[in-house]
Amino acid sequence: MAKINLFELRREMFHMLVGILFILIAMFFPHGQLFLFLVLIFGGLISFLSTQYNIPIFTKFLCIFERECNKKFPGKGVLFFFVGSLLAFQLFPENIALASIIIATFSDPISHFVGTNFGKTPGFNKRKYIEGTISGILAGTLFASFFVSPLLAFSGAFIAMFFEAIEIAMAGHNIDDNLLIPIIAGTVMYLLGLRFGLI
Image (tube, rainbow, N blue to C red):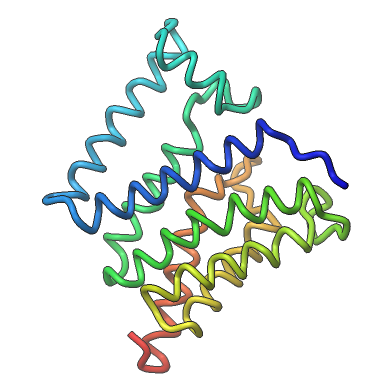
């Protein structure tokens, strides 16, 4: 039986919790998107300051959830998730935006967790596993179906996880999944929805 990496499990659970809170605030709080934008600005400021100074609470928090490779950009994953999700609200109808955000919330962490701990079949990228990608697609389809048709949910999750599996680079740096997934998933669902009258 595979030994589960508890640090990665903690990170993936935190990722899903942030996504769920983001969706609830956006849906039910007055001026929720504005509030989330302000949280993004505040988080970006704290991230920058923490590279220069020791901020006790935030530094301890990073030790619990942050990978060593991201210490030069503290909170990178959460900040990019906020950017990608807020962009989705600006680019797509609300139901498409919510579906794309929920795909980012569940598909990415579940695919990573399953692939890392139980994956046996390498995919296009040797660091990613087919088992993880399939799990991410299924999870994204399930949860996105609360906001759009199952066909759109599957299409968005499938294409988003395909791009997540191969990784896209720009200027020599991989584009963060948290930014990429909601935009790709939303674009696919929006275009297919228009084409087949499913929006």
